Length: 453
Ligand code: CA
Image (cartoon, rainbow, N blue to C red):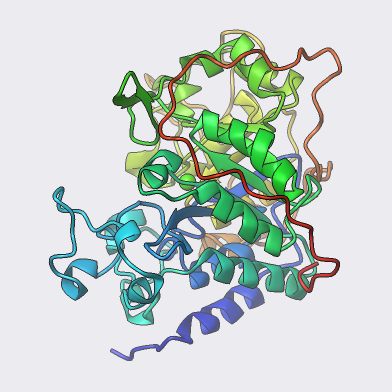
């Protein structure tokens, strides 16, 4: 098999851009967030996958961020390297007692020697998936800077703004290692001119205390003010732990999902991100019927995760990926979705016939054409493509020009500000934090000119 050497991803980039139409996903007031880049089609988190996600018309590209031993910020979902690289083969014995190879234990130079080997089945292997030869591309883990360099460049090439959605991963874990990942990430963002709320960026994190710190301390010190998204977990401790009475315990997010909690975070947060199963149960019933309306009234957007098209990933109430998107975008009323299948989601928004966007306000799901009664043997299908767009059927994942007018309203470029009646932030719940972060950074003067904007 022919090996495509290090510049191979660039061929993919060009291909992706050639396939791009003049459209982006901004067909309406709904956005598509490319979860770990175009991870449903190609390996997650690498420059080729970013180029593909951009080429497919995604509104935002997600970056999961962790740090290396020598304080570099890289784009990697797990704090460990084993799942997606050949680290065990290249660096035997460099694992910790738990058997894992932590990025925090490797220098950037060492990490750059690793090859991405994400299993073919990891992100699905359905139609439109890059062939099972992607390991021959010799893709590597990008630094955050490399990814921003690519995206800022593509903004010029594509003549459109490309959103980014960086996630600061596990500040508590980095702090235990003496690293201030939030400060490191913000300094890089500042270097690439992401400094104001007008920039197309949401900074996301599962750690509520860290987001408060970013807003209250780091933003003023760095002369920045960006939109923030509070990620909400189901209290399983996979994402955030806090030190309480000398013991690391799972963070409990229940308070945030109360009205008072949402009101409190809305003083400094622009959006919330949560698993879609926290909004809708397995039968398609709303679990928190007023949450979306409450969030919107507070000026918060709602971006649930993660939307996948594989049959085994579809809940019983959705007959297809498109039915699932229709349900969440236009019945539940979310503002955007994190999806592995950004191209399919972009195509869905562009080819969907304009329809009334009914948003339930009560506890019941509105009768909906695409939503399937789990008891019913017949599953109605959402029209996925226009009959006049045969290309859509033959190229899953690729955005195609809509044969019907796109949803009329343009995407807002900024998040609406909370109404004036919103109460100021109330005191956060008392949680004993881990060791204090590194010393407060000194204010830095922004550069007068930049090549990036
Ligand atoms: Ca993430």
